Image 1: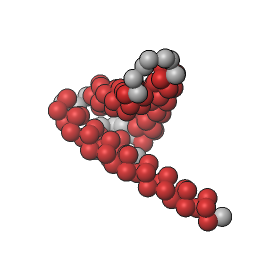
Image 2: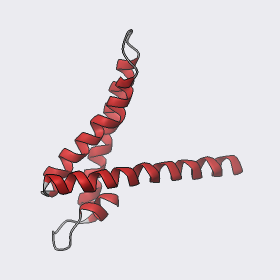
Image 3: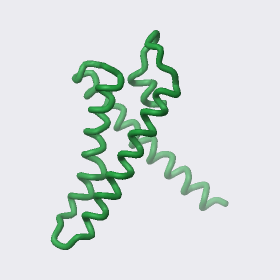
Image 4: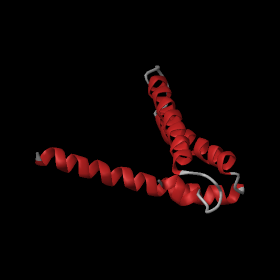
Length: 107
């Protein structure tokens, strides 16, 4: 939904399904990137920032590059909208996580 809100435009011919496929593609990459970061973190003498690199920075850059090519928008527009969307996404995940924890503790 966030991809459609930030990158969708009227008359482009893109349906919600197109944005959902892009989202699934990104989340698959982010999941694999996080796994690689956690596996590298178990190696001896590896700094802890590797987890942050593979968990947030690389998926964020990948999202910007993929959105630029998928939606055919100017790179500056993609960076600005991608950054705003990323912040909104993080807040949405935090709010839903707290809500989930609250409901689990309640029942």
